Image (spheres, rainbow over the protein chains, first blue to last red):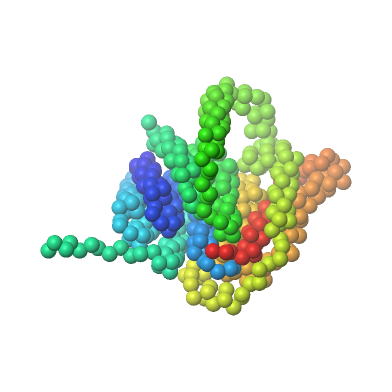
Length: 84
Length: 105
Length: 330
């Protein structure tokens, strides 16, 4: 079942990538990259369990954090039209 | 233990379904706001389900705690990011999709 | 084909598509974000190749901080890419094709993945690092042991490189600041992004605590000084984005940051000088505790990781401040 989850996560990643590449508006792309980031967190966690090395979970946690900060940064800096 | 493995498999399967559905929704919905709804909801739900499924397979306490932390973090920041995104897009004037009524009736 | 092989193939495919999308993107914002996605996929590939420390650093630095700094710089300047003049297209294409061909040709000389006869596997020093590091250093994470102790001199060079880069950016960017309108800042921040503000404020202590954990846990699992510094920097960047430069400077003013950038390097070099004063060589941690050399090693490694973490965190935050204080023009 772990392998099935891995394949499903890969499929979701490819779908999110498609939206990031096509996306008609900047916001579509930000959304798609955010989704891609969450899927990467899940990917790293599942791979960690598949290969029997749960140390990978630290990387997944950092990645979740970085994904959030990146999304907030893009939002704030592309939308905010005044000086900081 | 068999019961744990079965429960974990069910959770992993459900999470995978949610994740793939969210991805499909991201591609197929007609405008940004509906896509946000699909992606945000399915993303957070699928992530939490998969992580809970992994939690049942966790070999020791450390991994279990880390999985819970990741799940809690995604549960808090996922919807927040989606909300902020939709809010910013609304302020920026991204248009809401209106259904085209067939005039030939 | 096992699911892991499939994952590797799919990820490599995604890399290719993303690279093509980056070259085709007209808006540099999109290019920067796709670049972040590229780093993400690279980090996942590193995880598949079992290189966890590298994946950690790539995820934190390449996918996170780099993207944020690029986007901040883009927000200060023009963010549409100019079209290449037609007469430059052919020579540029030729250079690209030749460079790619050269790289592909060079890659034929590389050993295959996991090849038992490759120099890495057969050279005796690999054995030394893997086995003796456990006895000499008692540090379970061999990567940290090699980086911080056996090759400590190289890591000192890396920290100095980061220090120099930070100083370079500060020299270029620290100039007269545009007069900020604090009242307008505050009004805008009160009205918008309320949910984000509350969530960011709640997450801040956990982010900083996690940075400390990564620093101290670097000897037992993936982590260490560099990654900890980046996470710490990311936390402060989040706070700056949400609450404004004036608010965050009450906690961490630029003056302190400039000092901290130097303090980290001084700690690292200071450890080296201290070991010389105690009678050993430069960065010979055994001297810290002559009766129990591995205890001395642990102490030395911890001190230099703290130094690295301080410099990296200070450089990240200082670079972000110096970009933001110019005033976002959009």
